[in-house]
Image 1 (spheres, rainbow, N blue to C red):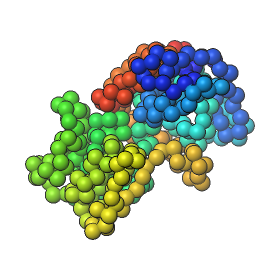
Image 2 (cartoon, helix red, strand yellow):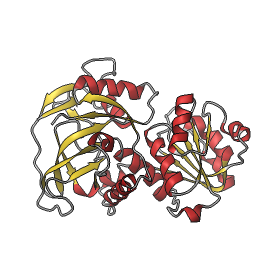
Image 3 (cartoon, rainbow, N blue to C red):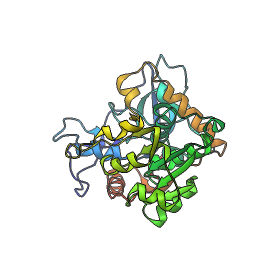
Length: 342
């Protein structure tokens, strides 16, 4: 089958960084589904793994952890799906990705594609939705009952990116929180407001100063979706006593952070990495399928909206490399997708 893979870790400016390849079509077995891929999306994890895949790989590394497609075959232990079902999912970073015509995926981390969304729009949603959902409702333990959150607030740093775009919606439209998002350009500020943010502040300025400018005193929760170290002191300033902080971006080795800043306020600090369940085969791995099905229901009900903003055409090495370059530019708003011609 046709796929796009990595054979050598190269910068995005090198046309050989991604290559069109022919690989064997996988076979469904056990709890794995064989999915005919219709559309894929691209996330920062793709660019990071591309740059760290190694050199002269004996087999191409297939990237891609956002997919929408149709089940072609099921393994003998599958019980959740059947051939012909339309699905969407983010996948398992320890296995081959979905940048090809077919993909093998554990059925427990798969959801039913929203009926109201095209394959292109659905492909934009899984990874960011899982990340935001787990960060808000599992890592920080925010209630999905809006009444229980009356008077509570959250700061989402990086509100216009892929995860931020759905996190703002979940925090506002499901949890009923007062949502303060950060953005630094008119386009991204408007996007955050379109997603449901009550206030938008500039993350290029000190968070404490920005809070004072808009008349805010602090927040109960912070979800930091960008460089952790750059906002560390600012987050310590604006988090309320006994608040909760969730991080998704590694700190650089040359930028250590001092967690003692949060001790006086008894702040709880957690990490969110959506591949934890699949990587370690946790006992609750099937929860990702459950939450994707719930997100699908919310999308079909119009509570949530898809976050696709750009389409890069058919999946091939040249187009996928352009998509990687866009992400690496740091100017991405929402999500971008590519389709797989049928």
